Image 1 (cartoon, helix red, strand yellow):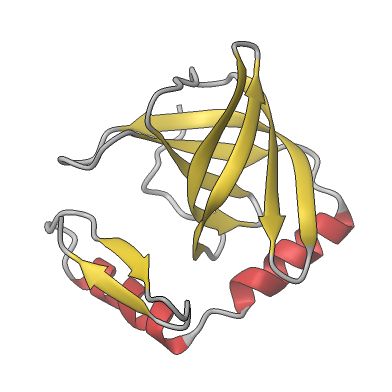
Image 2 (image 1 turned 135 degrees about the horizontal axis):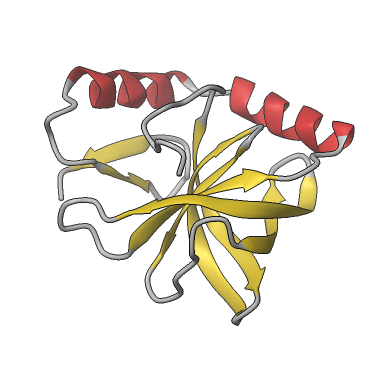
Length: 144
């Protein structure tokens, strides 16, 4: 099992739905973070065993719909937050998809960088959720 705290590629907060097709059926969950190598998603009901194969589909701004195969690499529950967090690693990412995801991750806004610095400076604090304001232009940290 891969350690979920090891981050080899840059990530960006990403709050959008992801469709996940697995052996047990199709379910829509929420993406929490995205990188060139995969996503972290939160599932409220569906369980994905480690090493299980899935088909992910999600919308990437400026890139359209992305459909990609992935494997569940780790799962964990975090404090009192609802659901289970799952790390999915992409399989055989096409050059075009890799380029689109890399461009999206590289376009982090200053408020996202500040939020990430805050998370890193207080590792013993519960994970914070973020909420987008009505204009979807800034993020506000909300302690759970």
